[in-house]
Image (cartoon, rainbow, N blue to C red; front, top):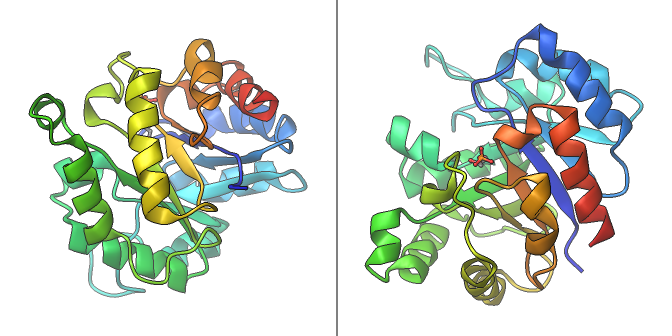
Amino acid sequence: MPQKIAAGNWKMNGTLEAVPEAGAIAAASGAVETILCPPATLIGPLTLAAQGTDLRIGGQSCHPAASGAHTGDISAAMLADAGATYCITGHSERRADHGESDDDVRAQTEAAWAAGLRAILCIGETLEQREAGETLDVLTAQLEGSLPGGATEENTIIAYEPVWAIGTGKVASPDQVAEVHDALRDHVGPEMSLLYGGSVKAGNAAELFALTNVDGALVGGASLKAADFVPIVEALAAS
Ligand SMILES: O=C[C@H](O)COP(=O)(O)O
């Protein structure tokens, strides 16, 4: 059985004032694997807030190199040193804002593994690609291009995030999610966790988690406040 996972991606949100939210989320973690990926500045503080609980902390991206002359970047080893045990790779915002290619994502994922981090590797189609009927082809190509050989359920989680559903309030329909996740399951085998991401909220989480091949969610906006995220974690635990 794939592991059930509720992951929150705080993106470029949060200062020290947000640490108590993580504390409240930590207090509610345990029934399913629960992860918060804050900005790099908060990995240390959130690791401290999560100490003694089942909440795990992750980075949002990493440079493929372990160290060096890469101003503004952070390595997987640094994330691990600060307390992270997970790292998102291939998020569509990184692919769009920083021009990260499948090759870059594969190298980052390998770097995350080398530092002992479990990767949360994201793939997703744009609205244009969906409307052109290219969704499954695009996702297969992204997976084949960015998932390194040697991926297992121990070192990798796949997150399907349709770009058009991220931060828009337009969640993919259960049929759309099921079609993609069933195809992904055929691709990655029976044990790797498959997360859905894109406008997941407490109000739509249970319906998504009821789908056979949805093992959890990668949540953006609704992970910033414990009052929004904890009900999603609870819906997953109840699924
Ligand atoms: O990484 C998280 C996703 O991009 C989803 O973000 P969202 O829940 O704000 O739509």
